[in-house]
Length: 327
Ligand SMILES: Nc1ncnc2c1ncn2[C@@H]1O[C@H](COP(=O)(O)OP(=O)(O)OP(=O)(O)O)[C@@H](O)[C@H]1O
Ligand SMILES: [Mg+2]
Image (tube, rainbow, N blue to C red; front, side, top):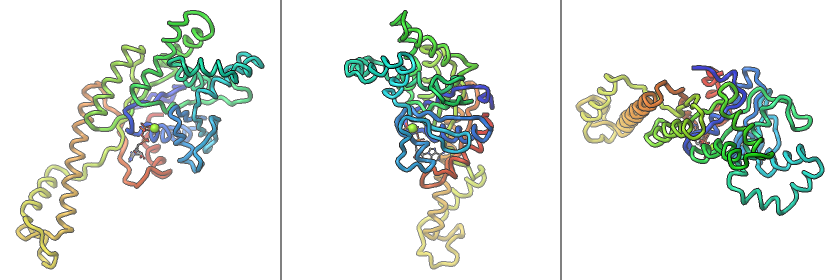
């Protein structure tokens, strides 16, 4: 699977907690390795990329922060995006507006305005030349977007504003953003999922809503955190038999504890049961991946589960090794 290399903007969404931020950062690392000047733009205020790269306070202060060669991040703050926008558009008047309480009230009271501003900033990052004074253009903008429902609503915002406003700067900004985000040569929406019932359902629903409400085809689906199935069918049957034949648990003193007819030592029983439950989990995941593939009509891209207490830089690099295939 490939096809992301020629895109300018990737929009990652999916159910809460499935690994959107992790995948966004790992994809950023992969793109930077490929020589693409990349920015991971977070709309979620988590500043995960900055933290992963050792910026302890996690604050990029709504500004572009260089993490490594070719790799940058920004946590998009709608308010900051608005101030920038007004300054670009209206010069000193923009400054006055940006600091006017009435205007702030208008922005926070207008449904969808924060989303429109956030998308506008993501779009600005993808433009060459940049509208922000002195800013360098990027080859790739990876948007770590909110979870499915809010993510979809965010993508729908430009069109809504264009329809409501009809004329004027908001309508034209809405139309420009909508045209960019719905252009498959420019942007791709990527779903991140886990191989579990609910995330699979949500991914399939996302694909439908994306098509029906936004006129966008889901470009790729990445199924994250798959555990390896280390046992073949015969080995799995052997493990099940050994557990059954082992019956009770021995005190561990018998040298013959592991033979089929004698009780298993606690350690051997725990190891066998753990092997069996990992196998069951892997099989259940495979069934969900198959359901996802059937629903999508194509195979999702797979990422492994990382057996580390937290996903650190080494883990991200490992996921990036896999994701390079997409770029
Ligand atoms: N492949 C993986 N293997 C193991 N753990 C993972 C993997 N991917 C993500 N995680 C862990 O799962 C948790 C959720 O990941 P992450 O924060 O990236 O999800 P998210 O979809 O961005 O969540 P949210 O909806 O809250 O923004 C984190 O603790 C992360 O370290
Ligand atoms: Mg996240």
